[in-house]
Image (cartoon, rainbow, N blue to C red; front, side, top):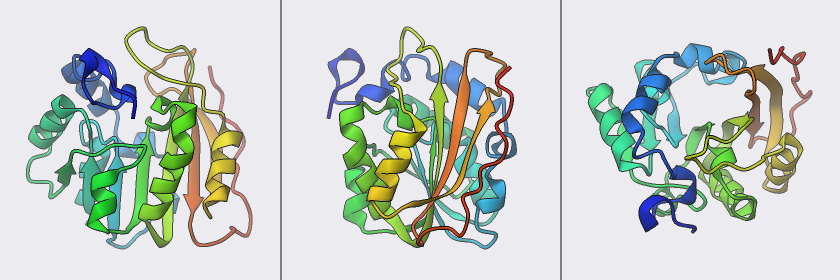
Length: 222
């Protein structure tokens, strides 16, 4: 695994996140779970289930899902963000762990399988050579009928971050190679008003090919 900021053994994709944790947490919490996942909300299970939020950040999504009755594990490798999330969402019932892609080794060793795995604004932080093993790890953590929710950022890379181009076609091909099939593929503009940033939203299912790929009309990027 490549190392991140200050020569530590943090994943390279976490570069810049520790130093800016308070600012980033405020940014994350400024939008709601419902807003961030509006295109895919209908694909979340209506009944309580086991959920893993990978790269959970401030815990916004993890806490929202826990409030709906789900059993939620939040994996966040940046200690500063993890502490903020534990403070902001104390009493939510979310279990926080220090784990990260590409291998999610700790969670893999626990042997838990999840009905939902959430990967919000994380995939583009992985170098291309780490993505095959990362997709294998994610697929291995899904229950037989589980679903993987991804949102992927496209646009200029902030100077203090590490991000890489992550084309949707490449991600879908990796998913199919690990038995995951698309239920949703769409795009949306940035919720923070950045006109040079847009997002791909994917929902992938481990329960065999969907009858029809749901691909709503593309949203305006402006």
